[in-house]
Amino acid sequence: MKRILFLLCLLMLTGCGTKKEYSAQYLDVFDTYTTFQAYSDDKEGFDRISEGLHSQLIRLNRLFDIYNDYEGISNLKTVNDNAGVAPVVVDKELYDLVKAGISAYDETEGYINIAMGPVLKVWHNYRESALADPNNALIPSSEELSEAARHTDINNIILDDKNMSIYIKDKYASIDVGAIAKGYAADRAREYLEENGVTAALINLGGNVVGLNDDSKPSWKIGVQKPIEGSSEYVYKLDINNASAVSSGNYQRYYVYKDKIYHHIIDKDTLMPSVNNKSVTVVSPSSLEGDIYSTYLFILPYDKGKEIVKEKGLEAVWVDKDDKVIAKTKGGEYVR
Amino acid sequence: MSRTKYMTYMAMLLTLTIVLSIFESALPSFTAVPGVKPGLANIVVMFTVFFIGKRYAIILNIAKSLFVLITRGAVAGILSLCGGMLSILVIILLLHIFKDRISYVLLSIGGAISHNIGQIIAVSFMLNGYAYMYLPVLIVSGVVMGSVTGTLLKVLMPVLSYPLKEAGK
Amino acid sequence: MGNLFFKSKDIIVIALILTVAAILYACIEYTGKEGKTAEILLNNEVIKTLELSEDAVYSPEDFPHVVFEVREGKVRFRESDCPDKICVNTGFIYKQGQTAVCLPNKLVLRITGNDVDTVL
Image (cartoon, rainbow over all chains, first blue to last red; front, side, top):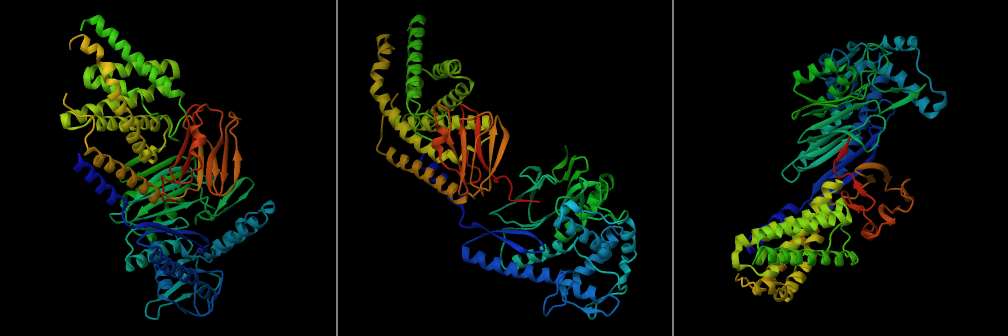
């Protein structure tokens, strides 16, 4: 009896563990709400890691920014401003990201196109003014959009591996890495944590989640939100273990015009917000891959998307336009 | 003991159980945990397990739960049944493992803790709650009430077993 | 039956059981995270979600005598017309997974968030 109780005590002591979960939030990176959770021995250790991570994210955010200049760095805005003028030598991270963007173009039949800048800018402007003044929301005309689309050829982007410079040939063209930047940054964040010996952590960069797991935290539970309602209701729950989960959804950035939602993911074929799905979540080893494929699958109809998921060995959860939930995961298929 | 005598004896025990459980429900609730009561009626149930037979203890518990079901509704009835059943099973198990090396007070504590846990499991199922939060409170209250019922059992034993001696068992 | 009523060694066993309870309690206290929202359930259906960030007082439509109160990130049954008052006696709850239950009214107050680590 005593022995049993003694064992019970031991079991519970180990169950308790010595590491504690800490969390931090950043409101100033990637125009989104970022959360960071990690298991650490003490608060000081966590704060140190969190500060390092935060400054890393701030740096990447500045590099990938297309709206603001920062002193002393050449960012994507510098590259865009120099379109048709001159190549711009950039930091490795920005160069790598643009390069990744170009291979994403080939992988996704051009649906992920970082050269879509001009079209995305049109939508960005309409969205900003609609959000500032919802009563006078408008949508761009098809003329305006097709005019912008004339300057979205991916071949306008010229990379120079030797000098690590980026040049945009067409002076009206511009690069927008919105579809891949957070995924890339999440992967870098994960590397930073690994280099600093963090083995159990979760970063949520506004829809791009990366989880690190060890024995003390074998998996992270991710709730896939119900589109638009934004309630605490989940349409699906995922377990990830040393992996990334990324959602592309119509609820992340949008405005309303005549009771219709105009979100931020633009279909290159129609130049309009895509209509096939309300959200797609992809689980993959790399967050960059997850970012690319969640956007790609979001634009594609489910029937085409499921083939890609099968071929690429990904896990994905769709909420289609009729609110049907379809999950293809390791655990099998789930439809509701 | 004759069949009639046995029936009378069982009826007496059942009455005692019911009286105790009514008395108990009149007491103010001292834990914040839903449905958890001291389990005074357990004294009789335990006595039955120890001195009459496991089978009769189970029958007694079902009868008591039925009574609770009729008088206090389905929820209370199910709670009573689950708590009582787990309690009896644990006592039987402890007796089986430790035979005569375990004291009545410990048996009683084991029974009381499992009585509480059985009830809380039932509550969790009914209300989809996360009842594990209550586990520490339940264990402590089990220890306290188990000691009390164990001691009361000692006091009541001569009275309760009188008919048994009478019958020459 | 040769069982004794009480053995001196029982004290040790009881002490151990109480230690287990204390450790369990410490674990639950220690690992619990503060919740952000509370759900009120009637017959297992969520009838209302309360944000714990905003102080509020709420009474369900069909239960005018039951009053919930949110204060400083915690929530409780402030009043109830049930006979046992277990729900009111539970006091304030605020950690994920904590519940306060009113069995007579079939009402459950539950702090949510325990089920997922983050939301996409």
